[in-house]
Length: 151
Image (cartoon, rainbow, N blue to C red; front, top):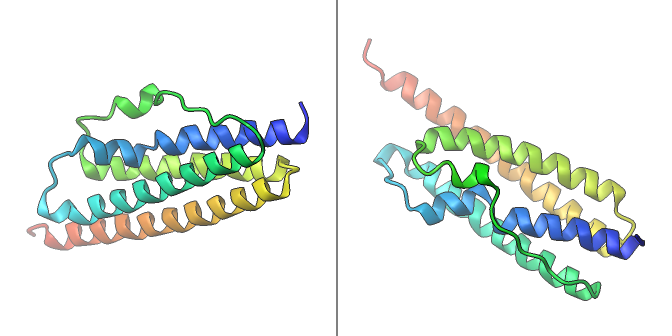
């Protein structure tokens, strides 16, 4: 496999994971959202939008490298979380971001095609920023919950 084929393969994996992101699945499932959980759903919406933008950009990059953008079905672990609470899903989103960031870093480090490597670096930066934002949100929600409990 040459460098361009390898880059296309990595970009297609990114495309698959971004198209079928957990955030997008949660958003599409339209779960019940209690008033205190609205910030979580807003964060999910923002993550889903960024995942779609990354997927579109990855598809364009694959085409520019004369590859064929792939699209696969969601992983079973994503579609099995229909009935989970948003607060629990927030933890799953953080775990998924940790996994994705590790994969994108490995891809970036292996990639020999400059345009693809630069895009992968951008995705790493964006996902790290999103992960930090979600972690701050989770900490704020925990603090709010702790202060609102009756003594």
